Amino acid sequence: MITNYAQTRLRTITTITVTSSLSGLVYYHWYRDGAWIVRTKEPTYSFQLSATARAAIEVLDTVDPGWDGEAHAPAAYPAARTLFWTRSTDTDVAYYRIEQDKDGGGYATIGKVFHVASEWSYRFVTPRLTDLSAYTWRIYPVDAAGDDGTVLEIGPETIVRTPDAPDFAIAYDAETDKVTWSEAA
View 1: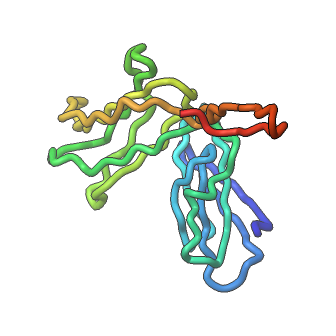
View 2: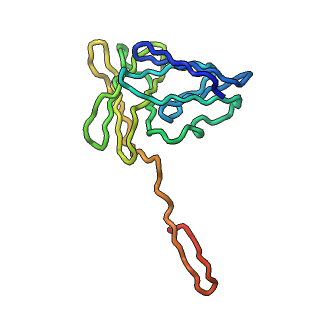
View 3: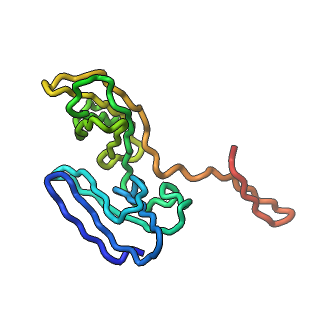
């Protein structure tokens, strides 16, 4: 159980520190807008947020090393997508520019992730997404001169967080005076 929550911000980095009432080895599951981000053994985690970004940050703590944080994500938050990619083979990458297209309306830059020489893989959590919309993302490695490298495209994906209810058939039998429910084919 989280008993204390502290937040600090330095430019685009927001750091959350929590205190748990659990003892022993504690596993912290971190969420941004309801999407699972990572599990840590430390009660501190940093999120990169632009100056105007708003996000609901949650953390759940447990002593169970097998607890599935993704399956137990908090409900009722707007959808977001975590984009994963491996580093570019280009030797002079300064950062990665992330662009997003919604329903074919054109690409817009939604963020950038700075290249770190010792990192092999990267991830970026998108801003809030709209249900029943199709999204495509492009990730460009960009060098110090501002030139784009080979693009990585992810998608298209249609966001469906609330599936349609099952279609049921209802039959009434007058002889037995019973109603039968069955899933329609």
